Every structure is written in structure tokens, then in C-alpha cells.
Length: 137
Image (cartoon, rainbow, N blue to C red; front, top):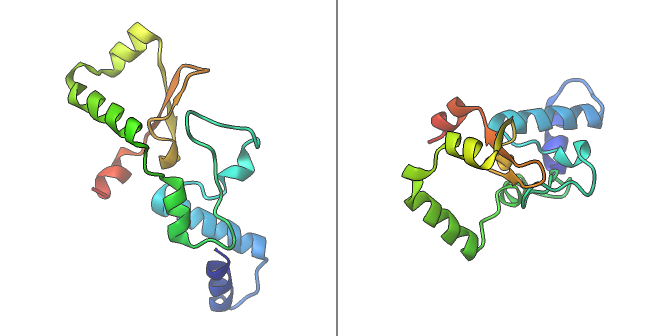
């Protein structure tokens, strides 16, 4: 990230503040991959949602490393549970989750939070920019 900040500073004719450059980079990354790369700044340090913890793009970290950290590969047991659920997808309907289990649905702008379930609030987070996903298939 530091390399991106330095590169952008060199290409501009003015000398903006580093915090201003960082905000611009964060917004560019968020619009490009729909992940808030400053998420740690907006949440409490003990915030956790399912297995998700907000993370920020570190100054010394490459963009690819940040993306890898943002979308970790699931454990084998998690993968098996997901495959079992997908095999029985015809019986999995939003209205059934809502009516039978009282699950609430909440939209999110952060792709890293998609399909996260918060058991405390019985809420399932859904990334609600479907056109973004369709464009990247």
C-alpha cells in the first residue's frame, strides 16, 4: 500500500496530504473489489461476525496479500458443510430461513461479509450489489 501511495503522490502535480491519498486509494479499492480496505478503522477491536474480523490494508502489504487475507480459503470441514448444503439447495429458500428459523437478512456493501451469519442477532448478511457480481463472472 505504501508503494501505491508513493506512486500516486509522484504522478500528481500537487502535493496532497498522505491521509488524503490514502482515502483516495481506499475508495478506489472499495469500488474495484467491493471490500473496505480500512474496515478496521470503523469497528471496535473486538468486533467479530461469524468467522469474519474486519481488516485493513497494511502499509507494508501488497495488494494481492490484502486480497488473499480478505477472502481466506475455508477449512476442509467448512468446505464439506458448504458442499452438503449446495447439494440440497432446492430445499434451501430465504422464506424458509425467515419463517421457520427467524433469520433476518441484512444487506452489506462489503463482499467479504457476504453470507456471514451472526448468531447473536440471527442475521444473515448478503452482498446486495448483484450487478457487480454478474459483471465479474
